[in-house]
Amino acid sequence: MRWSDRPLYVAGTGVCLAPRVTVDDAIAQGLCDPEHAPSRGWRAAAVAAPDLPAADMAVAAARDALAASAHGPDDIGTVLHAVVLSSGLDAWSSTSYLTRKLGISHDCRGLEIRAGCAGALSALDAACSMLQHADLPAALITAADVWPLPIWDRWRGTTGDDVSGDGAGALVLSRAHGLARVLATATTSDSALEPHGRGPDPLRPWRDYQGHPISLADRAQPFFDGTMSRREFVTRSVDAVRRAVARVLADADLTLADVDRFAFQFAGERPTRRDYVEPLGLSLERTTFDLGLDIGHLGAADPLVGLHHVLTTDPAAHRILTAAAGGGFTWSVALFERT
Image 1 (tube, one colour):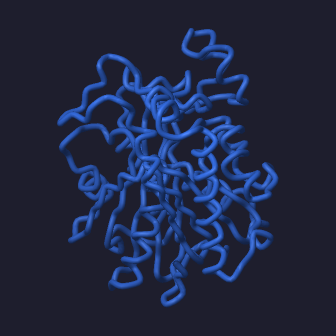
Image 2: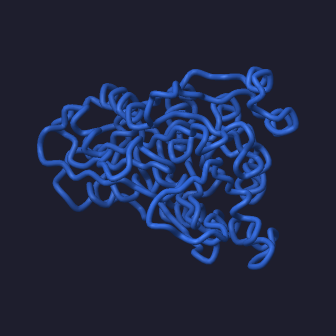
């Protein structure tokens, strides 16, 4: 979707990352297998204190984004919060918590976005539509997750390649001004891949982690054994990435050569090369891949953190493309141009 009827801008971004724990320290503590993280290039992960919920990290990132945006709480007409695992409590409104903590006291739409690791970019797409068609000055987009034991084993990789980090990203979307203009967004999907992340166990009316960490690799194995080959899965995933990127570039009347930097999810070197770099004909150096090696895969916050990094550290980057995949599967892409 090309956002040209009313220009929309990234007015401010914010990030909240937990303190880093190095892979070497994790190995020394017996938390990480020596053959896993080091062989895949990971150097460290952001690890939050046990009593720090993801929602409070989102609040911190949002405060920084608002401070950088020249917008105040009274300007925010909608809050969209993306989360993959948990905001800290079931049967509870994380967006109401955010609005209260941020001093947003007027009528404000709050939506929690559950689109996996594509959640922040899905939220951006929805916020763009809202600001195009409603009289709202600005919208706030946040994403945050923490990955604690016994629910999640951050160091041993739930997909086989990843290390998970605790953190949050935030973005203020404005109709008035900003650091960069949102040129276009696009999303592709393939629900035939949904069983990949569900596994063979029956669905339940409640959460039951059965005393052991979630393993997405274990969930995926029956899918590969009986439904679809790994080769076909990768082929379909790569095709969806190409379609989403092609769509957003066509909507903006640009080509890949016109894009200076790429902020993909922090998935590790092998998935980044396989899913993005090689299919799109890019160099790894044009991406924010190296940033992720020191913080881990944050979940839905990855593209927000990557965008923040480029906007604040690389003034030569005029156009920036962000992309992320969410289990189920969806692939979301957004293209920005510095003002």
